[in-house]
Length: 224
Image 1: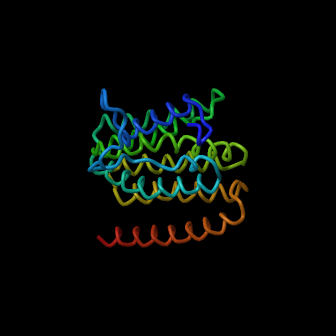
Image 2: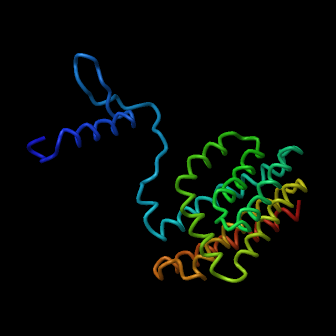
Image 3: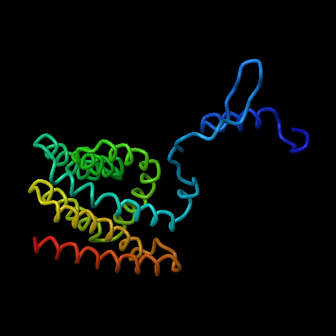
């Protein structure tokens, strides 16, 4: 402790953090030891992901990769109670914003309800983990939407399209609608000036690539 100039309190906190990550183990009467390498590693993101707009865009990209497939599975597997839960979650966003709220928790709950309808509990767990990062991303995107006329209406229409496709049992349309929602979320960040110039170019390129993938997917679906 003298060598590094830190107090006992700092050392105890550091040890506690390492124990919480299963990197250290305590043995009564012997001391604290480095843990053997576990067979599996806990999922964790760099906390820096919360610190910049470029990171917000990265989280949106993670959502796009996940939520298209989640919505497609929900379209195939959702039961009537699931459809009702998704409808209620969608409507709750409007209720919250009409009451002066930001709708962030309700927006996350809408997407969580779709994950639950997918019938795969692992999707629900993954989204639950991501919410600590998604919450700030959603807050930023929703604040951006409130500042620009038409953005909020576009988001509402995109949510409706996802719900309608799932209710209709159309996985191709559900995947396309959910992917489109994430693509447009990234595009709105650029249009609203929320993304720094160096990141905007990369975002535009990603959006263009996603649009091509979406068009190809829709064409393949229409040929079946």
